[in-house]
Image 1 (cartoon, rainbow, N blue to C red):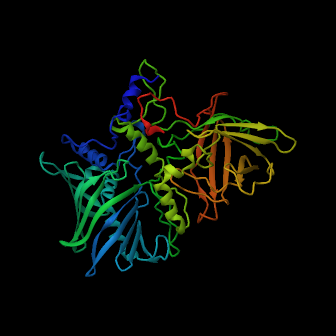
Image 2: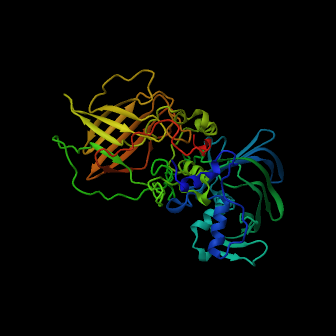
Length: 528
């Protein structure tokens, strides 16, 4: 039986109530400069989570597409398909212009490097002289403007608000003085920069939530240079959390990892990054000297996870951190933040479109949504480990749990595999372990080529190999996963370290069935 607090949170998804998400329209002017800046961030859709789980860096990879007209070097292109894809964490963008007469222009920038491509990720040649121009183009988008606002000291942003009419912001963007005029909903309407000897003006109108995840996309974009038309686009589609990869071309040095990267799917389950654990106590050891990994394990709760009803009525019932008190926002933010980290697997370019197609049809294709087993890294760390002595080097039972999927356990021998891998592969593969000093390393092969590595459509082949590394220190264990797939991936994919805490005997999260949960009868089908 649900408490009234929880019932109230779910009222927006009750039968007969229209779906609602995002942010309510602005009804009154915000008072004060801090309130104005927060309104801009919120109205564009960049704020995610609520309370301790709130973050301004969750929105990272996005794209929008449409058609229109491009005027360059005295030539007017009738653009049949225009795609602009962004990774804010990497300061990167890819502009893909497809026009009549088989014209295709693909222009890429990542930080201070720029290059052109013949197809996405292929046929690259350097255009570093245009890097600043393209970087400023990215920063003039509504999302680049909000990203700049978030990164600046508020004292560097000048706000002009007379109490009526449009509000204007003056701020430095990539060292260039930038004027931003806000519309009545406090979203960028006009962005003006003086770049060299040219005045560039970008106009954004008719914002809509095209992707149904609360990120507001302008459906009409017009750019002029010195008052002359340069770009006129009608935006018809957008995607959020999609696959946008910007690998260093062969003629560039490898790019460093982005400083703003978050990986909520594997750390915190979409609620935020848990605090770092300091190990306590001595490391228990087996008679052979190796650490004893046996017991119950679990990651500490993320900042927005585990909030409980503070009232007397059902005080142990979990609440959900929802922006503006709208439960659909909790759902959207949970799934969006869980796919927005910058540490994504680098696929070979010929598979990028397949991943995008998987994301578009995720509800039909994702094994997780059909109660099929999932594999590391998506399966997560073991929640219970049992050591089973045998006449060889021993073996371990790993018990795993992932919300809403079949609970799984693996019988993992230390030494050779127990059985020869199935030639057709299996969902869980065939594991074998060995000790590397104090770390237990579990290598698994023999997968069936049907699994997804994440909810973002990252597919895997029959040649998938996962390498899990577990190392205990006192009451804490570090869990690391590396994924190898020479058929699909350009290079191995190493996931962030997850810290696990020893739990009292018998305390485990095992037991979440793949079935409808015991939610209040008033809740609609959005939780399925």
